Length: 307
Image (cartoon, rainbow, N blue to C red; front, side, top):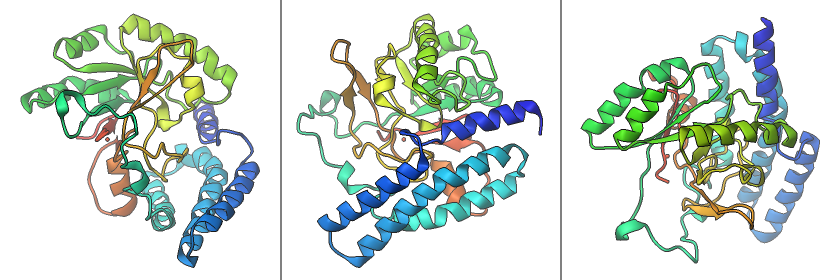
């Protein structure tokens, strides 16, 4: 395996390390949480689902280390098969909370309502993760304009491409949103708080240089305490419910909320809904022809390129 592939693999291994460190500690917490849930809810079926779900999520933290190490040399068909078989028990154990988590639909007590008295809001966003996606951004924007849509394009500042200033200007002038997507998108952002703090300096520089206010982490990793150090207006690194994510803890709400340090302006958090739509199809349907990944308060997100 090339040295570059090994470096990328190590970064990906770190990207799925559970926040809080040792997977064994995570296992102990999972068992404790299961027992607490059992005491509050009845039914052996519920108990079985809970134990299976906690066991699967703990096993994921171990197995993904090996998977991401081997991923650069695994054929696409093998990766797809592994994802499909991995999704089968998760789909069963998470049936009560995915794709719809009923605890997420209740309105917050201080909810002021959607702007202009609307009944709902739907936001379309795109994570541009590679050169191929970058080359197709203008065509996608033109398609959306013909359909009278406007969306958000999130670019990786120091990834495998340079984001042309004229493209960002074109998108803004035509009513689109531009955001920052991670820093390198290699899984290294959340390796440690020190790494994040050093990366935050660069991210804030790009936020200022690009004159944008939105941010989303790679791989939907998130630590709101750390993210609050960024000079951003809103964050879209969380979701309401998605057990298939490397960091599967959901916000359990589809409504925007605020977070941040008391001495700084509040940051708006927009949970992603129906996250990574095409990946779900890839997990559950064997024969499908689609490109890239897809992630939607109604907030769908196409990671890289969908069409």
